[in-house]
Image (cartoon, rainbow, N blue to C red; front, side, top):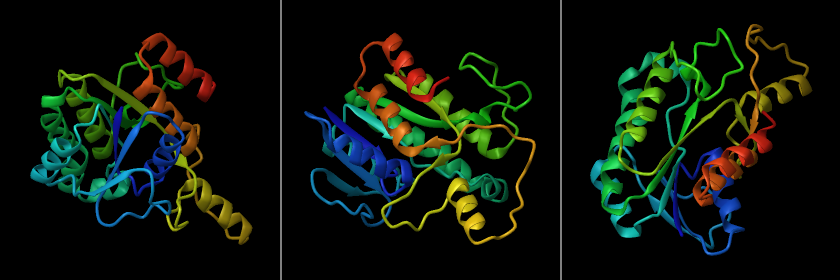
Length: 232
């Protein structure tokens, strides 16, 4: 089975590559903008690809003909999306369109990483059937991407995540958990919101959920596996 991971230089992307390397009978294509920043370089193919370039996206998909794409790449800084909605739209919505178009010929399964921000936060914790009500530009872009995937005619999965944390190979990318840990270790005061209740997600756990979606054939088993993994 051929699995292509977008955003492979990112936290979740790296964890996916490492987790997939432990699976038998899986061919891995890691795809990211710029050079490969995963420390381990063997056992998979790497493609440098700016996903906002539809021609390059088509080239990579036609070259490898993936059975499944796990799409982790996105513009996820909520404040930055508010300041630059055009780039947000390009990176979070247009890119999904390019992937769908390129995958039509091969009927690839698209696993799209979305967000709990598609809900308005007034009545959580949420179930997947609950009504969405995005409030930010970022949230709207991710919901639009979900709809594109659902209506693509391809096999699809949307995984809504929250507060992904972990450590990348270069240890340069921070996240809210690592930032809080370091601030407390340095005895620095921190300013944080106090009216949100969310569940941080370890990147390795999310990678396993993505792989379960990619390799699983039975939807009921998949939902049982994910709920067990995250202890819903």
